[in-house]
Image (cartoon, rainbow, N blue to C red):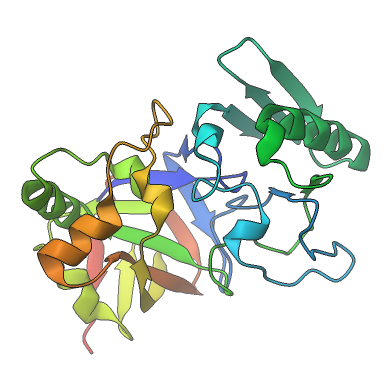
Length: 252
């Protein structure tokens, strides 16, 4: 098995950033993955005492399909986050400063328009992850499983609909579901597979057009009797992971 794509998503719900190599630490996400999020004004998120909240409390593709039109990029060296929209709007701010995050929050809320609830706030809390689950995880998807879903759906399904960190080849479709509780060597790191990933309405959104032009959860249910695609894993032993690295399932 081989890593074909490697991504981080610095801002929850926004642009995937392709990576060539990354170093992971035990018990952590990929560096800067889901490190920032726009909390809706009615979300009970307290940056002074951060706790996990469900995705609907934040800007997310499940509820805000037009977020796919915001093109974002994060420079970890400077802390600068740059975003642009198709209407020519743009912003570039230091996302590691409170002042910069304040301006980013105002800009994103204006873009959301009526989808913004109350006064949204843009957050970064060192050490806190805005993952979709209450754990710091790395998500993996078997490209053969996406191909099998597309075959049953009768149409291609772009892998970025599913917003995983690692996409791999070389496994039979759906075999990754049998890995729960087992460990993988991924490049120089060791991951422990924890659970399957249930899919929601976020996957309906075309990442290029922001249109809801497919229904992967319904397609999964009809073809396979479940809504799962991909698995979550935790980092058991840190190390470097790069494009082209091998994945090896360790003995049970």
